[in-house]
Image (tube, rainbow, N blue to C red; front, top):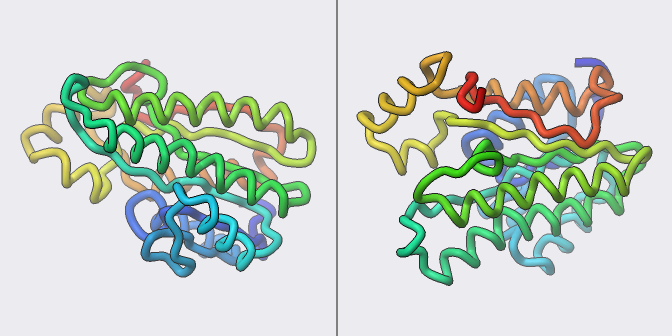
Length: 222
């Protein structure tokens, strides 16, 4: 990708799944990558504003933020506990807000990318809290893209089903197979495929892309 070598990149939730693959991809492109996570190079709970402020104070100036940290708690709508609802929204939406705000204050001609989800585009049963959080991320990204242009580009990536540790923990082999049957490309995405899209969007090749919401889902939402 053009223009990524030497860039200072922060990835939240960078120790597993999409985040870990994204760290590897940017490092392969020659970027200087810092992982912020509960168990990252910089330890931080993105839902806690004070921890986020302290983490970005350590980071200093940066060029790219991939706001990827997220959690999922699978339950029927009528069984969602308020504390679970709050935790999912706090991490997935408020956490993105905290990190994006801190990053934008330290950027000059930067890029902010957010991990949303196809769950933020269409309804998925047993994920009401997760769906709501990701829909919020999408509108946050679009709003930021308008407010922060032309200095900072902002885009949201909406993965469909990705074979991550979080997905494996929630789905049996039979459930995974059933999901694959409903995807035109007949498989889950690999985390590296999502990472490749992040690398492209952060690169100079995507310099005219901002305010975009890009589904990467094997045709599922088509």
